[in-house]
Structures are given as structure tokens and as C-alpha cells.
Image 1 (tube, rainbow, N blue to C red):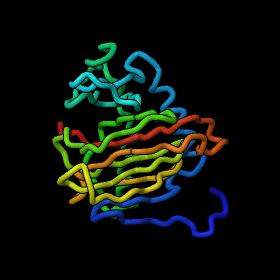
Image 2: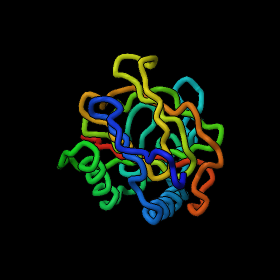
Image 3: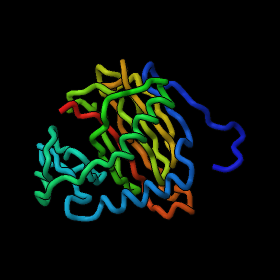
Image 4: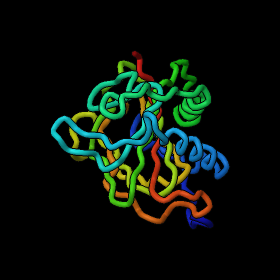
Length: 214
């Protein structure tokens, strides 16, 4: 949003969880979007995730480095076309390390090797969950492109309250580690048609970077 009355500032939502607005400038957002479009193409492209109970996630997903499926990792798209997972690029790992430095003030030597890219249409949601399938507890890095969403950041004990709702816009960064690493979180709402027009994206992309420890 242009010319805001109160510019958005860095916020520590919980110990170890930091929201940094507008971390990616418009050129960086466009560059990351073009990379996401390449990654979304088959083979091992964008897919619908099916849960063990027979349901489907409304956000579609593509993975890099390691392929996530409920609730494990593999080197091939075991719940899709069976292709080898796309490689995780070094530049994306450096972006993750820089994100941790800029939010938590930490110099992380852990090697980021997983990216989960979720595409949200206007009606997509993500239920409250924990990122607990990794063996490493290095901070999770979350980047937003496109439509604004409500990001609900909760606690480590339950999917219910207490939680904090944070508005994530295109270019925003959210990092959670330390005591917040296993906090429940989700996306209860996406605001359609709120993406920057110059980005050329309808919907929302969330790029989540993790360290597998595998």
C-alpha cells in the first residue's frame, strides 16, 4: 500500500518469531516469481496434496531439494508423477541465511535444503499445523508474493488460542525459530486482488525454506 499513514515496522510476534515487512523489493519479488513459475512446471511440478484421511489441501504445492508429503520427505514425488524432486538452488539457501540474519540477528551455518512453495487461490486456506517433519530445528523462513493474507501464528501446545493474526503482504518476510520453531500456524484467509499489479500474479505464493537435517 502506498503512502501509509503508519509505515509497517519489524515486529517480534513471539520470542523467536519476527515479521519484517517489505523485505523483498519489487525487482526481487519479480525475480522470485519467475523462478516459482519455472519450478511449477512438470515434471515434479505444482500438485494437489492429499492427506492420509482422503482430503485435499486447497493450496497447491511444489517442492525443491526434498519432496514433502504428509508426513515425511522423499527424493521423488511419491504422491504425484514419481519424478525426482527439483534441486534446491544455492542462491535460495543464501537468501534463507540472510533472512535469518536480518530478523533474528543470527549467523546460521546450517544449510537450507528444502523449499515448499504453496500457491493459494482466492478460496485457499491452510489449517493450523506445525512444521515438525524435519530433523533440524533451524529457523523456518517464509516469503510472501502476490495477494495479502492473514497469517495466524499460534503456540507450541495447541492449534487453538492463544494466537496472533499477522497481515502478510507481497514482499514480506516471516521467520520463526528457537522457542517458536514448533509453533502452530496457518492461513485462515486470503484477500483476492490485493497483489501489486506490476507483479503480474493472481493469487498468493508462499515460499517456505527449511533445513532438513536429513
